Image 1 (cartoon, rainbow, N blue to C red):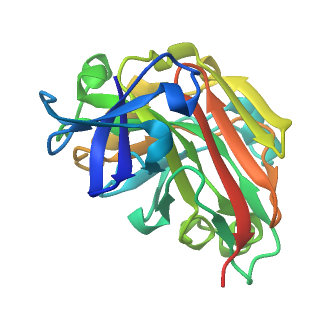
Image 2 (tube, rainbow, N blue to C red):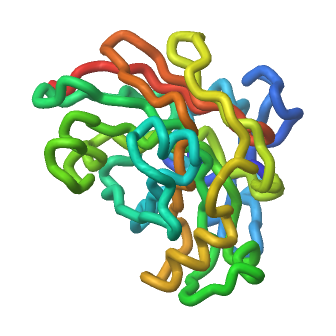
Amino acid sequence: MRIARIVHPEGIAFAAVQGEPGAALDDLVASEIDEHPFGTVTFTGRAWKLADVRLLAPILPSKVVCVGKNYAEHAEEMGGPAPADPVIFLKPPTAVVGPNAEIRLPANSERVDYEGELAVVIGRPCRDVPAERAAQMVLGYTIANDVTARDQQKADGQWARAKGYDTFCPLGPWIDTTVDPADLAIRTELDGQVRQDSRTSQLIHDVPKLIEWVSSVMTLLPGDVILTGTPAGVGPVRPGQTVSVTVEGIGTLSNPVGRRS
């Protein structure tokens, strides 16, 4: 199932996106989910063409847990070795925006980078989860862009400010509940030019390990999101450009870039 959050003529709702993967919006239907997508999903019976609704971020998490330097080549391009254990940090929920929402660059940063990532959406409350049980805690997978004010990251020595601005965590276009995250192609394009091109099989710490590690530190709640790390090829964005992150089996997350007013 592909689970989206949509704005429809009467409000906001979760919906199941139905139709062939890669089909045009006119050929996809959003069927409204009753209440929420956790547990047994039921439907209201209402549906709209996807072209007639607006996609929002597919989930509003209580927290976004991110993983740094989880691809060896990215660790190398950042000037250091890959860490032996996952390095985690948080983005605030207020950083989350959906597909086609503008990434707004702050005036006090001279360099803001894209970072395309696979994201895990947690499906049930959990703590101290062993890796062999991690898949049971997952609702599904979506796409993220861990937007980063790189100059501030370097200047501060920690990452909260550089990664915490409003609009610095695009998520979407939906949550896929059936995809296997072990070996998916991941690609980031800037104005149609490929800048990142890798596979999730290159993750140093895979999804089960990350869930085990993060849940040993903090309780994860339904809807929480874990960003699994970005491959090599990160680089700056400028106003007027568009960043698109594609993950095999899920879809494409695209966001234009502007300036924060």
